[in-house]
Amino acid sequence: MNDTVVLPVLVSFAISALLGPVIIPYLRRLKVGQTQREDGPKSHLKKNGTPTMGGVIILGSVVITSLLYVKEYPEILPILFLTLGFGLIGFIDDYIKVVLKRSMGLRAWQKMALQIVVTFVFAYFLLHQAQVSLLMKIPFLEGKYLDLGILNVPFLFFVVIGTVNGTNFTDGLDGLASSVTVMVATFFSVVAVGTGSDIWPVTCAVVGALLGFLLFNVYPASVFMGDTGSLALGGFVAASAYMLQMPVFIAIVGFIYLLEVVSVMLQVSYFKLTGGKRFFKMAPIHHHFELSGWSETKVVAVFSIVTALLCLIALMGI
Image (cartoon, rainbow, N blue to C red; front, side):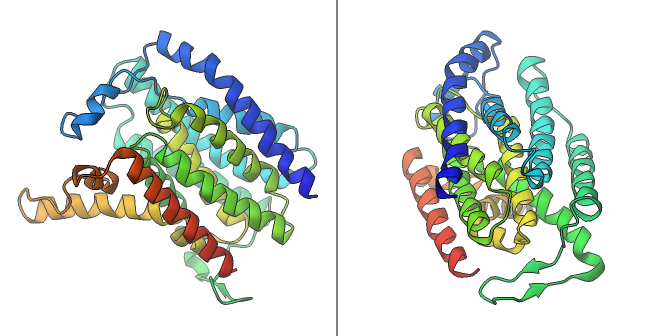
């Protein structure tokens, strides 16, 4: 079993590492370059023109690897669906912004409507096809589950869409979302193997895909994942958590996602309440640390270390 678990990691890593040199030059030829915010850290301006939409490398690696296992392990289908569903929304948004040169991308209501539709299909499949219970394991209380009754489904929507957008906000520095999420994916892989859950092929595939993608995404990045990757990873995290009945654990292992989205909410609310004052130097919060003097690599390292430690704490809470 242990040898088998390693295989999808290696296969997905190899595919990701091989796809990079093929897809990145193609993205450059398409001129799908990222445009940095003028009001952001000045060090980011040199990144203008770096290819984005690199999330297709992650998605391609995960899908190809998972197809090798899907017949024997159909439990991975809901995770694949939510990952691909949100990845497609991100791809459409990226395509409109960088290929069609419409800076708005999808309008906020369009993106939210699509996210609700994808989440609805996932929830329906979970309840009626996969027959996965929406009872949620409570950290550090062995055998205890949280049951919100009729609020279980609305809570699922809140968790899925919140996690997806938190992951999206985290994707703002070279290698940040990739490094944080590879820790979270490793956590879910360990839990899946330890509990005998048959979702491990896809969680391990994500670990491998992200490790391969990091070859091109660490500072200085030669490609960004774009919304194609960040939304897909958020879908993966939320789906894996629900398949393991562990959505509450996202608050622990995905603390960085939560911190990022809360920082944006605080910034916007404080700005409106005070007539233009800022709570942070810049949001999401990783930019606040940058503007406070931290290097980009230090922010990524610290956020990754925090996530690794929280994953270990979460393992103790199972």
